[in-house]
Length: 287
Image 1: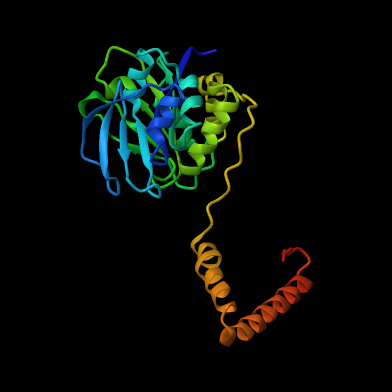
Image 2: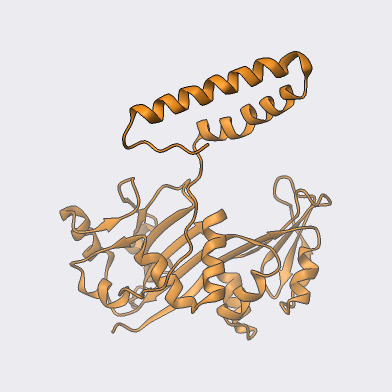
């Protein structure tokens, strides 16, 4: 089996105005550092010590945000807190809004091997968009392979970490899964309940596979960890029906001059649904 290292490379947690105090109560002993320019919609912001940033709002509706980048996570490890402990504590104080899981491979394997499989179609992925290559490291010869859309709540990137850091005499390939919003929260919950690296590896396996690449399969074998199902995001039409239309019907049912019209309209809609079901053998609609 290939020797690899794993880590959480980014962790963001949002919560109410008491988020910072909750992290202290959970045993993550941050201290407030220098003030910094806040992100949009936040009132104030501070660096955290030993690492990280805190964005604060005076409104509980906006709440607060703690962000720990890859460098921040490294600094926290140097202060004695390992990733499994940190994520278990942080996941109890708010909602995880971003979680990046990284696997570092230092055995000389190359993204070029994966490119050859991509060109021949010997790979499987959940992503609908074609993978892309980004020349991001100038004269070092390194580049990044991206799988998934930048707007997606899940994206995979594979790149030469040594080239990024200009450590040209080292072999260091990184495979990194970026998750956001509900998918980040689900992944964090699974990591809290299970073994962090088994869950992280399974999340990558569920995202992409290269059946004919030996070193890839040696690392990302089927771990058989069971991950939480993330509900699909409703499309705009569904959001419109479930939001504006639903609210409008509810409001107008309370008005005597509109109630009868709405009631008749709903009866006609129910009749149409029943007729549609009776004409289709394979269609099942629920009231």
